[in-house]
Image (cartoon, rainbow, N blue to C red; front, side, top):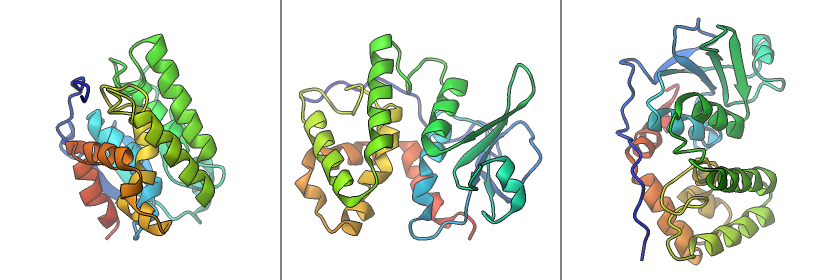
Length: 226
């Protein structure tokens, strides 16, 4: 029997009336978290979809800045000019807060805006589980064989009684967000395999995709910059 899912407020709508606005270049900070992305093509948005989803889940006022990764100024944000990255202001000191790499962006947004620990863990045991699975994803996903191996591991984890989500059985956490892009339908096609060979992952991905914040981002992300 599936576990009863803990309630996490997610209406797919942002608190700021212009949250999710798309701009170009390096905008002035106006109180909204700046998330740096590149113009979307068929698959490029997969690299930055995770922080966009979490920003929606947490109702974070944010703006999407489309950047040219050849721009010299972007070295001040990311040492190799990759996306995603974040620029914010420390609410206490007022100093710039620069964050880069997808998992670090997730951690920052959760630490800054997830006051209840819904996404990072509410107890020491939950926090450890979330961190363990997130680190495992970061270290392992990459080459074809590694992806298939991690899918096998996830399939085993999600097949346990009451384990509807990866780290905490009853609700999604950063661990689920970290893995989610690698379980999108196009990834299975890209690797030449069938999603139905991992039925628990397929069901888990459907649960994640049904959340309003996920729906909103997945509908809009492929059109960013167009």
